[in-house]
Image (cartoon, rainbow, N blue to C red; front, side, top):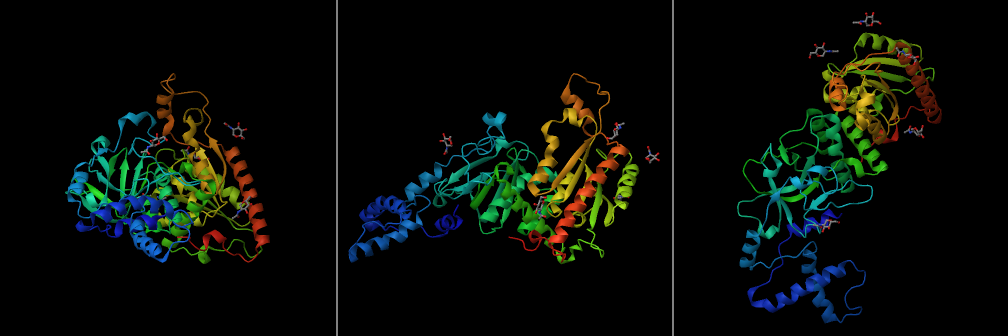
Length: 482
Ligand SMILES: *[C@@H]1O[C@H](CO)[C@@H](O)[C@H](O)[C@H]1NC(C)=O
Ligand SMILES: *[C@@H]1O[C@H](CO)[C@@H](O)[C@H](O)[C@H]1NC(C)=O
Ligand SMILES: *[C@@H]1O[C@H](CO)[C@@H](O)[C@H](O)[C@H]1NC(C)=O
Ligand SMILES: *[C@@H]1O[C@H](CO)[C@@H](O)[C@H](O)[C@H]1NC(C)=O
Ligand SMILES: *[C@@H]1O[C@H](CO)[C@@H](O)[C@H](O)[C@H]1NC(C)=O
């Protein structure tokens, strides 16, 4: 998508037709579509034009180019403009007819508009563009509890509603089915913007507009906000002070997650986020530390990432002992326990930068795996009942590992020996009963598993060390693409 072209269309002045040149204007209006069409062709109109005809067409070509994203409106057509202004129709941001398929196709958010699809990219909407026929996106969006009360319209820049506020610059508009607080859900909603920006000269947004089911949200979680700040600079979230409408000079709308991005694209997005987060937190690749010790043995950093409350270990000290013991048996292995809730964003980035193997109960804190070097390892633990009742959602961190280039080394599910659930016939109620349980442990199994993973990591680090014995940092951590 060519952002430059559509930008020009908006910022340049409208083509000027003067009242005493009506005939020229009519001719010009007829000419515009022809010239617009010809732009795409390598052959210009009339293969060998006379000097006069060339001068004539060159003269009008500039005007036609101005109109390349859509028809432009003659300046003095006040009557026409006011009619256009009055014909602007606002539609509900959340269309209940699509409630059953809110995540699919064109979704219930701005349901009248079709996404732009490009190979390997997330679907998006861009305004103004050919898709919008040069029109801007306008939103009345203050409601925070009912998305059907918020609305949107497409408006020609010449015919903005009288009460409209024009928001200059580039606006990122997001609608998520989930939320902006949870690390994993927040990240999957934001990844498409990162991919879009990478593809479009690393453009940064002037502001963000956040929706959930078409309801306005005024903030994102602190972790997500820091990550976006690391990547795009200051994060300004629009609160819509008045009833609006607010019209955006340029807007990108994302209403799906990263699902349709290609695998390589996802890896690039996560490489960029990792790189920018480390830079933001002042962690330079040089300072990342040696990968081998003085005897040439690979250094393996094993981190037990704990959480408190739901899905924490029933007996954290027993689990700590098992992993500490196994690590101590491997030369070059260093062991650390981190409490995820107690860490600032940059502390989380730092801990994970210096981690080769993370072992952690299932939970949003595992989203931090993205800050490890590529090919690092993940070990995951679930409370009982999850394997039987949680559905595919429990594989979120398997997917996350896949997308961010990590190695998911399997999971342990606390075995459900006999169902204690008080509603044995109802899976959903049962799942809610088990969902936030605590995670037990099996000493024999954990020890054996840790030994196998540490061994595999040692072998693979050994191979890397033989290939590049100079302890050079990995290429993907040296320079951020944006
Ligand atoms: C959106 O796509 C559908 C199906 O491809 C099509 O029928 C519809 O006309 C499109 N709508 C717009 C506004 O382009
Ligand atoms: C936790 O495990 C340790 C070591 O296995 C054991 O000594 C201790 O009693 C356990 N604590 C609880 C509360 O079960
Ligand atoms: C985490 O912070 C809480 C208070 O905020 C404190 O009580 C607790 O000891 C800390 N835990 C660790 C492991 O540092
Ligand atoms: C990651 O692991 C794969 C397979 O083991 C290997 O081919 C690749 O080179 C590794 N990548 C990095 C960056 O170490
Ligand atoms: C613990 O793990 C070992 C090895 O995987 C297995 O043989 C044993 O049955 C497990 N114990 C329990 C109580 O599940």
